[in-house]
Length: 180
Image (cartoon, rainbow, N blue to C red):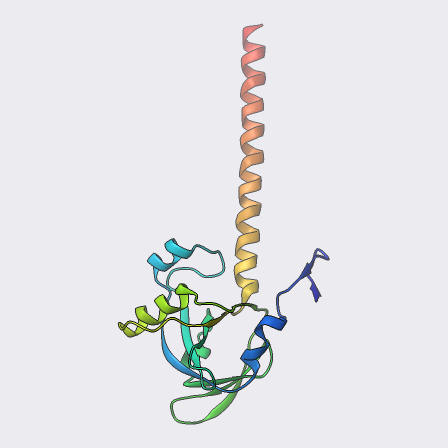
């Protein structure tokens, strides 16, 4: 486990036991696209934004296993992937050339049941209905960008609230002094 800058233990950058199956075999690209707003509205989340690039891959070993990769412009270009570690991918592009892709801090979530989000993403980028998946891995690349934006927006909200309290207190003091 890793500790973040505050010393808090996190599960980012770690492949959990539930996700170990993504390390075996090859993953073949089904399709790629831009994250649709309607999917964000239905499923929520703060780790991906409308318009972010995504790609969905299918396991060569288990055709009901899917891997969705979000926020990585380089992985979207891969026709096949082999996952070496949480940050290292072996990418085979359309010409058959192999290259290693290194990705910064990331977050991985795996579910061992039919997860409609992944099916909807495939339907969105292929315009075709798909059979339900049985396993979905959701890989959010470069998560530090999202976390920094979230931290910054929380800081701005906090400072805005403090300014509002100070302004309200000044108005209250002015009213009290004016009525005396």
